[in-house]
Image (cartoon, one colour):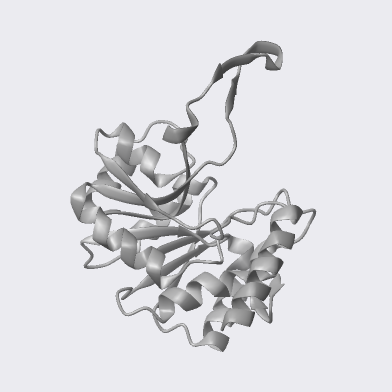
Amino acid sequence: MVIVAAGASQRMAGINKLFVPLRGKPLLAWSVDTCQGYRLVPQIVLVLNHEDLARGQKLKEERGWSKVTLCPGGARRQDSVREGLRKIRDCDLVMIHDGARPFLTPDLIEDGLKIVGESEGAIAAVPVKDTIKLAADERLIGETLQRDRLWAAQTPQIFSFDVINMAYDSLTAEVTDDATAVERSGYKVRLYMGDYENIKVTTIEDLELARIIARKWKEKN
């Protein structure tokens, strides 16, 4: 498992989202705790920016993350993923997850592992609920896309270790998720049903929603 958390929280008004408490524990700890406690995840590479490494090490010690290896990230997300992949050992399948998605569940991991055998990759995703417009010049509508074929990509994203490494080795452009790198290498990636609560915290508004979801989870458990 590679958990990518090396971003700069640029849209968080100066708040480091990774360490914001959600119902008593840092946002980052939610997904790492899930992986630490899941039997089918033998190793976790946690990719952080240089400024957060010491804080990440302290969190690792406090929470007993015996599976975790810390790793400094790169300038872009794809650079951070590459750094994380270099730390993985003796692996047939690798799962990549955004550290800013706290609500990872064992079911999301297990469902992905079941699906990935049907192709070279599998990613969690959810059907979009809104009608999507493709903008042309001056924000005129160029096209209305067919909603029943549109899915919003999430993580985890799971791939053959060899396939994801080859995809990144041959990558020449910037990509925003790992599946895109694999697709550009000519491999097939299958969607599987994610979870609408599996949100990525990018803005202050996302953080407020995460607090609501975290409260709901605590009440259930």
